[in-house]
Image (cartoon, rainbow, N blue to C red; front, side):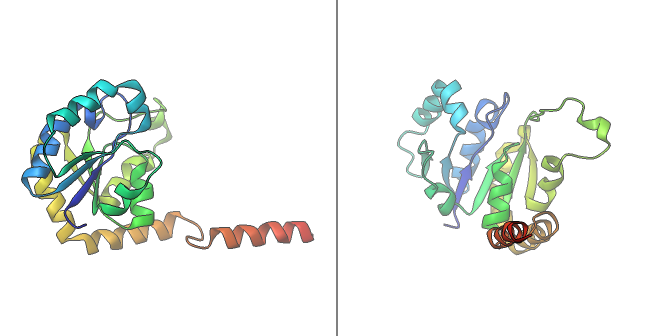
Length: 189
């Protein structure tokens, strides 16, 4: 659905649901989008009150849905644009679905405090430019306009995604066959 946005952030401290969900959702709804809010299951475990408060805030809004069914991928199938922060879902979304992502620059999720010593940008930072656009947390009131722009220019984004995938993913679409053949060759030797 071209007018459906999936908001699926990480569960780290300072994620979208904790910092800017209300103005983000309001911007998207104002721009005519259907909004599916899909929290990480850890957010559901750690902060259910926040999620239910969001649900209650948008009660009666037909274009808002809080998706808590972690076993289903229906919301992933329906959405045309993903909005996330530092979640790894952006990789799956872009590489498999070839659909654009709007990244909200919340507080970074950092697992290695010494990452800068390596002298290379982590892929979670690099990929943001390949998969879509970035918006600062304080600017989410403009998210609806940016999501519309991503849809209007999605072919450019898809081209960048495919280039990233071709460079970074080995044997995309054929990994099982190539891996199976490798194992058979090892057994034969």
